Image (tube, rainbow, N blue to C red; front, side, top):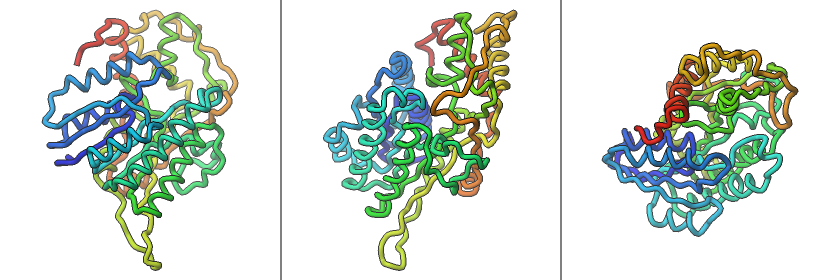
Length: 354
């Protein structure tokens, strides 16, 4: 995998970025792997530091370096691209979260718009073999047609976060056309697993349940989510990284944009009530919650929240066709691994283990 390549992963202390970097550190061959993140305090910084510490402990034949910085710092990015001449760039750095975007829009413009523009400019001035970037299932908004296909019209975002991700896709298309930059956008569907983001529902529910607090289940439980386990996401990213869109010339002699978009989801939406039931069972199994825990007494059905959508459901046929891959980890398998990690990290306090 990836022989003698120089690869930049932004957002490398984040959930997806750190897991991707771990995979590359173990399996890439004679590569230079540069991680980049600003380690902001949107959620617990110690968890980000824990992920970075895990990476530093991996014995690897590759060159690895972490750089703390911000995507909005254009001179810093320019200097990195000038120094390392990256072959592949994976842009996973972004301000995440739908609800946070309602109250803190500046963070999204700085990171997801200005930051991504800076990445595109760097890829233009220092040509790369492939730019892979994170988009989101949130671009589908209130799309009534399911499953969601990359051929669907996605011009009606219901959150600023979704609007920034759609903007990323549009900007990437323009740069692919103008400067012949091979780029692939990945629309992730509700990623979860060990070392995940504490602002995600499964993590937040767990934190509340162990404190004996009540969890709120939105839209009275009538939400469906296409939950995708982290290892499936990483496998999808790696396969996409290895196969950039082919550069072609159109009849007018100008480049046809080497540009692709894929969904990465489990292609199997789960009802939110079923999800929390499985989560509670796995938390009890992992000893995070006591055997006699009364789950029914700790849940409350509430209305839909602004910016949320009732369902997400990925059509992954294009991913399967082009890369012979389809995410397949069951929700119970994934939540079991999360619950076991949560017990080890938070209950036992084993924060320095491999």
